[in-house]
Image (cartoon, rainbow, N blue to C red; front, side, top):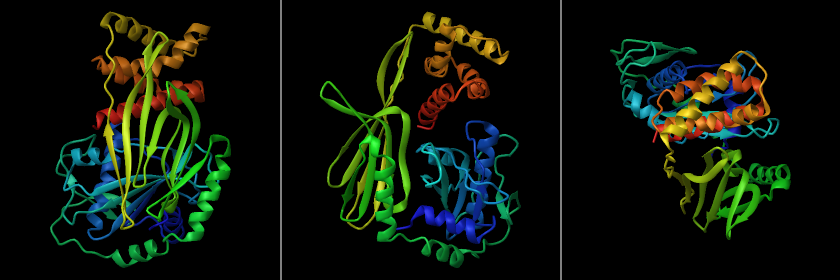
Length: 377
């Protein structure tokens, strides 16, 4: 089993960006430009490496390889995006890898790309790239090329060696468990060994609601691979497990005019097998709440007025500050109730909410996260 933290260190230590490896300070697939560039790199790495894994490391400074981290990204539907825009899409996995020196809300993103040994191309137009375009890696660059020769496999031995040097061992596993238990000691940390091989650690603040147990401020890590499976300071989740599986159900709080209700968002089940393999299945449970259209029109117009006031840096009243906290969620509710332009307003609000306060910006990130899951399902 590969220790993903060691894998990232090996990639950073021994290789400049090349035909099987790329690094980014951050990515943004919420906008067409960022989505197009991400798809271009996936396409190029897939085509340049037909028989081995390619990688993108996210959260690293380009000049000196300094690990700065990015926000936890839990888009389990990223493969759906790849399938929608690419012909002969590779298998793509995005994982969140914690590093000891980073704050709790930061990880390093690791994108693993496994080609299907066929030419990958854009299925349709996106941003300035045309449908049918084929990309390859030219050194550290992803470039469009006309393909008329057989793909050459030049990286398999090197990639195999790098992955071999990143194999996990019992010391790394034990160190990972102790680090987790010490770091999360205020949040009821626990661990369980599945199939005598996998070690899963989790923590969270527990509360009882009508005989049901829920957790907030949840952190879940698969220690063997140093992969963070779930992290949120906002969500509430339920956790159940048996000897072969671990199930997480996420809930989100949505509502209008301070009347909020919890809705199931997504179910994630990790199945552990006897042959030292595991697989993760996710299922969207979310059913968008429906509200009176007249009420939503009023709230939508109020949000727009509040956003204009924020853009002009005008002072806000106490009530407006409270409304600002709810603005991302209410834009989301409007969009889910067929106010299609609300998504544009939500995107427009991003820099202003981020500049206003970290707390309000976290509410924005939560709304976008829900939207992303719903959209790609």
